Length: 198
Image (cartoon, rainbow, N blue to C red; front, side, top):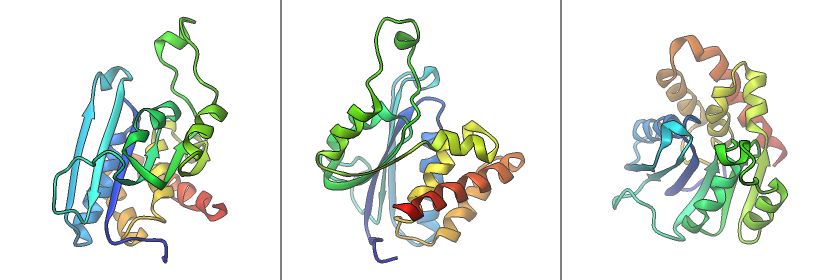
C-alpha cells in the first residue's frame, strides 16, 4: 500500500494482562520473516497486576531497541489512558490507533479517583497526531473472546506495517495457542476490516 514505509518505529502501550508482549512478538516475528532488522524492548512495572506496560518495536533499524522521545511513527494503545502516558515518544504528525474501552484501576473501582473522559483523552491526542479510535474490546468479544483484543489491534495496524498482511497473519497463527486460532483469526480480520472506514 502507498502509506507503508521502509522503516517503522512503533510504541505499543497498555496494561498488564492485555497482551502487549504477544502483539510485539507477532509483529517482530513477521519483520524477521520479511527480511527486516528488528529491535524490540519492553518496559513494565507491575504488569501482572494491571500495571502500565509499553513495548518499543523498531522495524528496519540498525541501532538501539528503545525509541527516542519524539521518535515513533505509530502507537497502538490497548488502553485509552496509557496512550497519554507514552505520548512523548511519538513524533508530531504520527498516527495512533486507540482502543476506547478502559481498564479501570483499583483506585477508580474503589471510588478514590476518577477515570478521564474518553473524549478528553482523544482531544489531547488529536492536537498533534492522527487518531483512529474504536472499541477493539467489543470487536474481540464479537470474535469470541475479549482477550483477543490485542490481535484486533494488530489486525488494524496491519494496513500500515511495511510487510504483507498475509505474512503477518501467518505469524498470528504460529504464535497464538492452537485452541484459540479461530477466535484470533476472526479478531485479526475484524481489526483489519474496521480500518476500511479510516
